[in-house]
Image 1 (cartoon, helix red, strand yellow):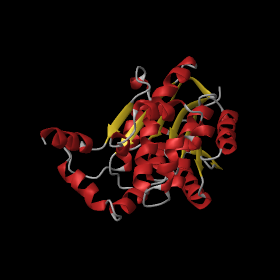
Image 2 (cartoon, rainbow, N blue to C red):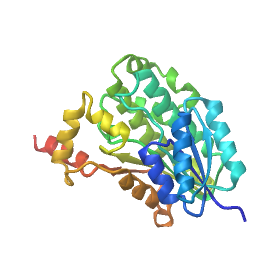
Image 3 (cartoon, rainbow, N blue to C red):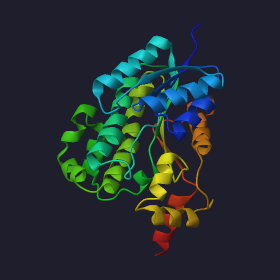
Image 4 (cartoon, rainbow, N blue to C red):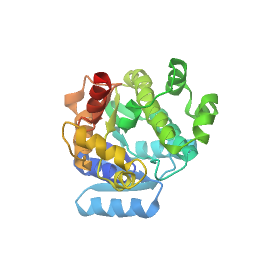
Length: 275
């Protein structure tokens, strides 16, 4: 009997931690746009005894993502998928963030929704920024949830977002991730599979540390200070949450988001209500 396949898209700190936490006993398919980073992550995991196959992917391209899904299915039953790839405001333009974080997530949900095995599960790494996105009316949120991936960038209201600052574009993309997961739960359920999202707070990855050193660093440190845990998250915190959502103990959980932010959003919400 062929072993189950774990697909991990994105080989940053969270992706590597998820692969290490959930990859034992499974075939691991690692995918990333950055070939050197992909090769290094694959070698590291192989050195730890994992059975790893690697493949480059551009999550913003329909053909690339669907080819990745096909390659995963060729390896065996696709039982677990973790989509961690993304760009942050300190890394890229608004247009690039929307293409990778918004369209890329939509493509992954569409492509892997066609190959995931019965009993399978997926997690999409979103962000606490999705819980802070403002200015979206109900019609815009419905469009972000239901518009086919190939047509997302043609939504009229996204033209202004793409032309604006990266911060709001990131928040909109991550808000869309939550809505796409909610929308996808029914079709994934028809295959006997589940899909959820995780919204990390400030996590000590290269991307997270770059954001802390950037324009929004002071605001992020203030949120950490007022949070219930008072600390930065670790990739292992996210991997533990992913392992739960991908595992049998979460068998009745689908179409929802798990905030793994140390209580930052709770603190901000509490402050807003008290004001």
